[in-house]
Image 1 (tube, rainbow, N blue to C red):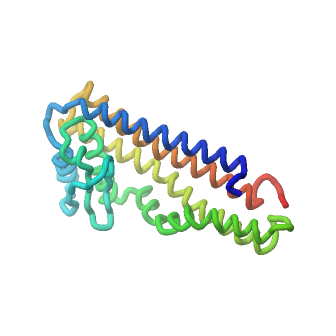
Image 2: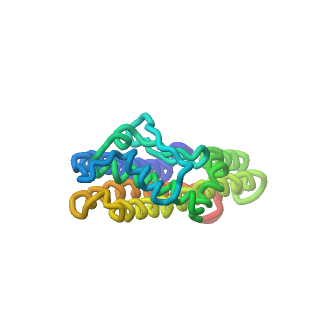
Image 3: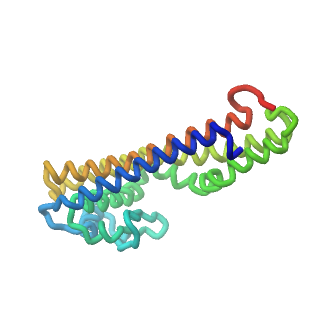
Length: 240
């Protein structure tokens, strides 16, 4: 299974897409760090200002260790910013901080795609880890027989279904992330935190690159879902 040429090709595609987009984010963030914002606000101050403007008073902003480890935690309602963003006074820091504040605003406003994503997280986590193994087990149990029948096939179908939920998670994440970035760019200019020109361009560049990482993840997940469905005999006809 692990030496299947198709599987190895998909792994190669995943590495190229994920590695390429991650590299793009890093490069654009480093470039954006060199663009100071005239307002002089830190990322932490920007996040707090956007939250106040949205009437959100129960979300706290904290510094979080790690490079670009920024995230919003809806469970304990904390907005966690990496050191470069929390203390940064650059366009890159402003964009990332506003993006994470955008997630908190989505949560407060019950943004539907975000609600869907949160609802399927438990099954998606199980599906991404267990799904492929169930397909493999199903194929093993169906050895010497048609994969598209019997106990092995049933187990493989369950595996594909679980992995499909994981794929759905990556798909719904795309609009969630791009919407947060859209909110961020609008609010940064609406509140006068960044100016048109270099500042706005740098913010847009960083957030677009970050959004593409989620597009890459969705593409990789779709390709793997098709692969597991093929191995389970759900597409492409029956195989021994």
